[in-house]
Length: 534
Image 1: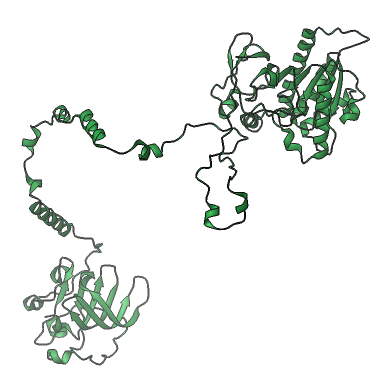
Image 2: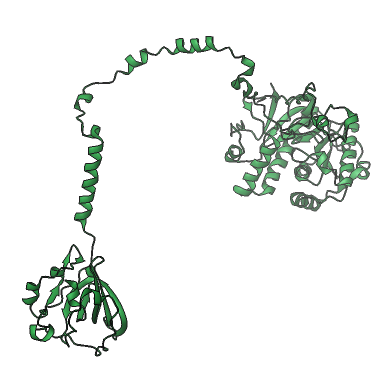
């Protein structure tokens, strides 16, 4: 029936508000698409546009009117409609739709009509069949229906969902069964558990298993006892090959295989850490490694914002107090003619700043103090330079190297503030002149015979292990003043002598962030405390 409209000029109104004027060229009953020729497009607020061909789907049409004009030629048979007809005469510009009548717009065998969306659509699609009785009774053009935004039909979606649910229930009969009978039956966990004798079953498995314990996977993969390594130890110890020296350079497979009888290299035994307590109240005092000490100092200076000079000042005042106590304990007679002579040995590293600050406080208390700094080209740290400048303003001369020590004479007490816990003697080998000067000063201190107080840790000793770093250049002190916390190298009195602890003012959070399990050290009411080995 749709072929009866071929060749007519129609006016279409789409849901989007676009109006079309053109000649019907073809109507596809399968896809519900109408093809128009010589089409004028009327967009709202824009001039008309002309296009030779335009296709419209039936569900997009909101209104359809047949325009008045010359009737099309008589309908040809279906066979003659296949070839493309010549293009009709160009349509007049901007045609105005007028009400169509039966005598004006339709030939005698096809009545005129006005087809609305309600008459030509079904579920949003254009219906190909056309009822001629409705076409004959068609009224003039109706008013344009309001714009309605197309939306998906929910009824079709709901029907499909219900159909799938019915098919699922039909294929799964168990889903439709009544479960009330199962609810009344409670599962007895204990009864089912008693049916399984775990001890008996595993005993039978062990009896039936004839595998040797040495070949079991669990035995092979059993991890050795965990041993905490020191900062100076490697995870993989170096093993010396015991192969035949004659095979060196041989690239054969036999030469590269390690003999199975070669025993592994023995691992160095870990250093036993000593326990420390305070002398006054017998409270336990924790020890820290040099790495933890550096971490705590970094937190104190960089995170909490404590100036380094404040820490040095706290340490120097505590060291001066300790030196005065030791002088009183040694019962060194002090006279105007022969005052107590304290020699302080310092270097260019941070530990030297504590020694220079101690010398300044000792001068304020009226003692004879001589300061000797290691010679060499090594640059001094900023705290050392500032303390040295302050000491110079007080009129104290700083000697350098062995030439300066030879001018000092006999010492009543020696303060070793050369290296401490942060710096190792072996780390200064590249600074050859400073390294040799420190070795000479250590040797001089040991040969002088005066009692020695080491600041933080004896020079030449490893603060982490308590072992000497050099066979001869090692300080053997009578006392050791630990700054902020005792180090893990405090293993025995023959390494450090008597121990004292000096408070530098580190916040407790610094020790906690450094990994100390007991972040509060047992200070009590003192800033200088005596410690004892347990």
